[in-house]
Every structure is written in C-alpha cells, then in structure tokens.
Picture 1 (tube, rainbow, N blue to C red):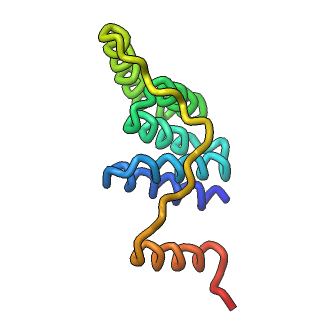
Picture 2: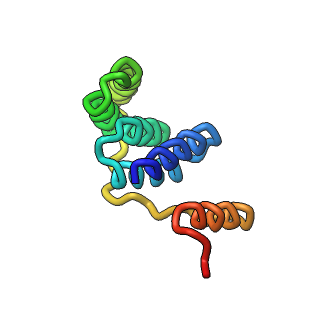
Length: 130
C-alpha cells in the first residue's frame, strides 16, 4: 500500500505540472488514505488545494506534511508562507476565500488513451484480468 501511495503522490505531482489540480487532489487524498504517515501525500494535497485557491486548507496540509516528514519542513514552511500572504491579500482586498471542499471530487473521466493507461495501471496493481 505504501508503494501505491508513492505512485499516487508522484502522479499527483505530474497532474499539478500539467495544470490539473483536481486530479492531483484526488490522487493525493487517495495516497494519504493508503499511507497516512507518508509526508509527501499531504504536501501534494497542499499544492493541489493551493492551485485551486483554497489557501487555508493548503496551509493545513503543508503543516501536516512537515509534521509527518521533517525533511519536508523547509518546503512546507515556504508554501505555508505563500498561502498566508495570499489569504492576507484577499482579506485586505475584501475577497472571501473559497470554502474547503468537504468531499473529494470523483476522479475525472479519462480520454481513451487515459483509460488504456488506467487499465495498464490496474493490471500492475491488481494483476491481469483472467
């Protein structure tokens, strides 16, 4: 399960780099569920929340990442500062920050090539269909 959590956290990072924070959020939450002590999962969740504009939830996720893995403390602290700055700017501008999403959105529908990757991924994780 921990290996799967690592793979999901890595995929979340790639989704963030490709501009898909919703899928990154879904992957990072799944990684946290599989391996609650894995610090990079909340780090990725924080990055996804930050990209979605939920700076308060992002800061909380970054704090958890630093707590779980002290080697991530420096990166998490910098990210939390960015979130605090954004929240301060929103407050001074009178802009309300978005509410935290209570439920993680379902994984988005994948195009045909994505479905083929998902089937291949499933075979790696679960074994081939008989």
